[in-house]
Length: 164
Image (cartoon, rainbow, N blue to C red):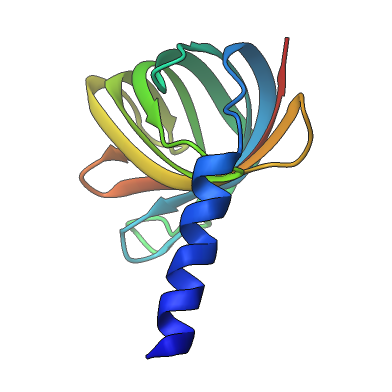
């Protein structure tokens, strides 16, 4: 019990003693678009992200991603497979907790374009995400996140941002 109390106290100290880097930021993101469909291999996307964090932890950000490595999908008629590419552009409201290690949530509007060789589709809707980040230096953060793109597509990503 004593070790649990010490661990919680240390965690609270780390979380409360670190100043949060507020202000504008920009960065790059890379990750896997996780498509929940049989016969589809997931594309790897890269993107740009920029935003602003208020002293309260609330903020906003915009993000654009596109496929760096195409996924593939089995053809319906038993023919050759087709490339699968996804592009997204989104605007989010965000919240980051305080501390050198922090939690992040985001909610916003996202537009996606999916090209699967034989078929293309566009969709706009609500997008939600959550993750954890670390303040690596006074101007550098690393974040690991999951963002729901739509019901059967999620984005597992890693991001490095620079605060200015």
